Image (cartoon, rainbow, N blue to C red; front, side, top):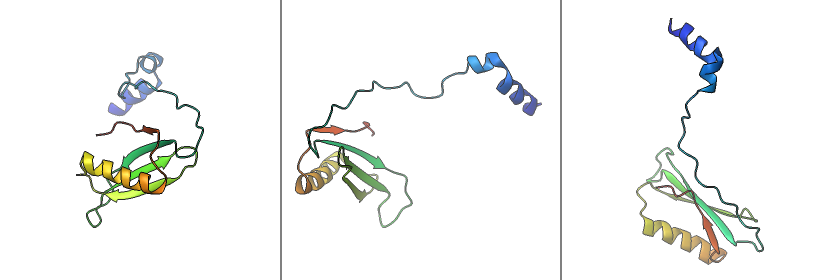
Length: 108
């Protein structure tokens, strides 16, 4: 009976039209302005939930637009804001300089 009910719902047109959205509301997207110089805009994000290594289960990813120059910095999930800022500053400032704009997804 469960199988028949699912098949009915999947094929019934009204059920398909009234399907509820299962995602969070979309944020306001903004265009990235045209870039004039390399290393002007940086994007950053965390790649998490990796298998635990020697205390490392997250990667801090820093990518510069226009050049696609990237840094992948191993760290762990209990990284605090000040340490993340230091990682960003150390890699960015010492190698390519500080960007004019930083783009992130405002993750926790």
